[in-house]
Length: 362
Image (cartoon, rainbow, N blue to C red; front, top):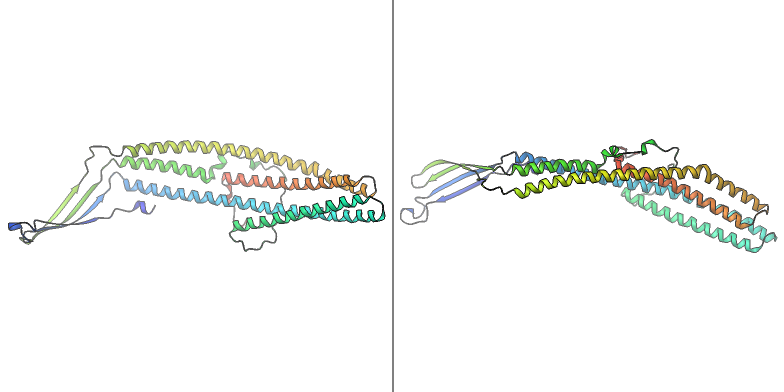
């Protein structure tokens, strides 16, 4: 933008003639020397149009920067959600391990007392081993999630003990039902608008290039023979007999058409993406509601009943193990559904450019 609005520099020209010949023109006794300054004057407002293109280029770079910023914000949100999700999954697996340890101890006592077959003890040990493996797996995934979030913060040395937050959904926000009109803050949309303005400015500059520039010159001429001096003034104007800028004008027009087509394509893509994200969000919300209102309470009740029935000898260990596994799977499914819901929310924020208006602290 700065470079485009600068004036062309003047030119200093020196000329010596009528010297080094024969007869009276031998040597420098009859030489004539001229020193003059020439200045190119751009016509047709070329400098102003070129400066406008420079400003549009600056704006395009700004929109690219804002788009990258949104990418980082979205990735950081997702990394934070993943870290919070793995924290909760680790808690679930730790709780499962405690249950498996308690059941293993209870069954071992029964085996020692001869109340159940040794096979029950082996099954309990296998279940306990699986619960430990699942807990260790979640610990590794939590560590990886730590590293991913720290890398997005730009500091791998920072120590993260834990993050806090609630992955809950009270109701389906009306604000998630976005349309293309809500995406006007998206830097990609704003960039296309700027590109359209820039392409028009380029067309105007190319049309202005048909107007020839003029060069003014002024100087002093010295006559060595008489020691006289005189002023010299010049004007240079190219003759526009042929239009030598037809290709550039045509290319600028096609560029305008290209930007229009890209804008239409971007509008269609964003509308489609928003519609898909809204539908996915509604589906995930329905999944969360079904898990919280029906499936999770029934799984918890079923496990509690199975545990009590097993301790009374009314059901075998496989039934207890099955209800315990089902409860664990349902809890994990519930946490993953909540995580997916908030990740979809982050994607929608990225698409509509809403994250640019959020505070960094939040």
